[in-house]
Image (spheres, rainbow, N blue to C red):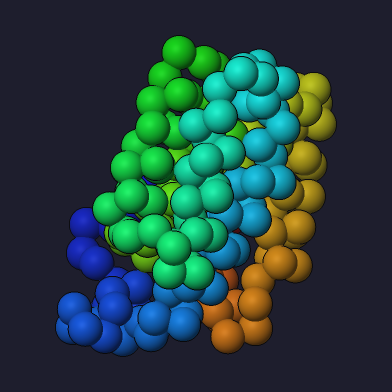
Length: 171
């Protein structure tokens, strides 16, 4: 489980009683999509004919642009996670990252799921003795991609949820 038992109001939109603006929700989705896309090649190398994870990332971005409804992005995320089920290692984690990115449209707090699975994919793709360093590099790359308006929010979320996210944000 990568979501907290009690929802953080900073990741709940204002119209639903939280404090998250639509603009920041969109930035979270775009950052999650970038994080997932950064490791997508691990999935595509294993399953070059399966477009579900790439389509999920595209749906996350299309949702931000207002081209698809939240439910369409959420469904695409579920399909990407379905693509992961039969796989192991980097390919599986990359597909899960894509799925998590797409469902940010539904629950903004999935932004860390996309990032955490991407870090797990980077670790799994590396030789065992280089896995931790590969994860730290991926984490640092993700942090470099954070837009300024959501940077502090995401870094605090990483600190708060690091333990339930397999401690991948120790970078």
